Image (cartoon, rainbow, N blue to C red; front, side, top):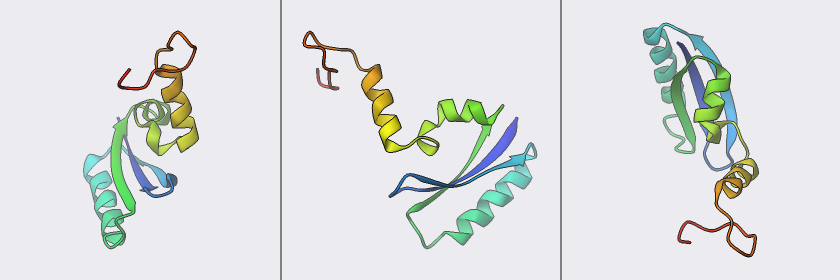
Length: 93
């Protein structure tokens, strides 16, 4: 399985970096630690190392890193059941 390094700006939802760092977990972790060190003083930057069979698999399981807020909201609205008046029902019904 491949390791993918992701740098993400929390406040804007911007994907700053998406890098396939290969299959060697130790090498990948060292890349992650270096990226975390580089951004240690910026709490708005999230650094994660994800494992998946492909980038497409990650886009399905970790959509927040790859889709805009608008796209995520639209996906959520589409997943909610509709009420009798045709509007999406909220989480409390």
